[in-house]
Amino acid sequence: GAIVLTIAMAMATWVARGITRPIEQLRRLAMQDGQIGPAGLAATGLPEFDMVALALTTAAAGRRDAAKALAESEARFRALFERSPSGTILLDPDTTRVIDANAVAASYVGCTVEEFRGRAITDFAMQTSHERIRAICQSVVAGHSSSYETRIQGRLGPRDLLIAVAAVVVAGRTLVLNNQIDVTDLRRAEAGLRVNEERLELAREGANLGIWDWDVVNDTLTWSEHQWQLHGLEPRRGGPSPKLWQHTGHPSDLPRVQEEL
Image 1 (tube, helix red, strand yellow):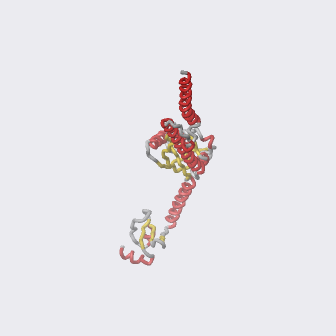
Image 2 (cartoon, one colour):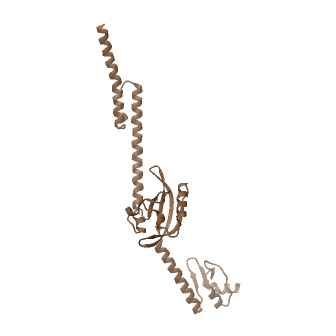
Image 3 (cartoon, helix red, strand yellow):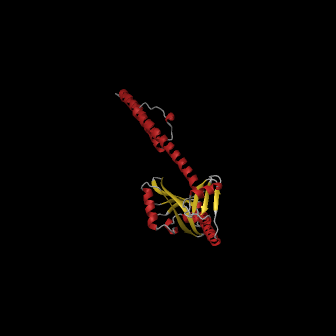
């Protein structure tokens, strides 16, 4: 009886160790979040435990790869976000407040990035109403993109901006990505050009002058309305301006054009 009991105890100890070793290995894998790779796993002799251990390490490897890919993607996004030559803003679509912005966008309103964060974008709008901005944000969250031109007020004065907005998912949350291009200088130049054109037209009318222009590259002749009158002809409309007429051909063709008219 003593011999049988001793043998039974020895066998029970051997079996217990055969069970506790795999359990200990699973415990270490769980504590290390599966840092041990599948190649480093030792067979325990229990298929069930070996399958669980392999599943844990495989899942952990997948999580590590996904985390690495996500970190690389976020790093690329951050680099593009911060180094973009245009203004870039991340907005909360519910509150229209600035979650993050690059230095270019902050400079448009005369703030630092830290000062700009947390501010409502509607505080700087001059031409677009608060309701319109909120409606655009909700439309973007619903899957639509939008672009428009507006004027904002900053510490350095008003700025004209071309804005394109689209949805972007950050940390599982849908935000509004606002990209801005400053066209203030362009709009000022266009306004100055229009003023100069108006002055030129007033000077031409005051001096009773006719003007014609020959585009050599496109072989297009353009006459002002008064140029027709100087030739005793009735003006014919056409071309980019209602006061101009375009004819494709050489200026030497004008006598023929006069005969045709």
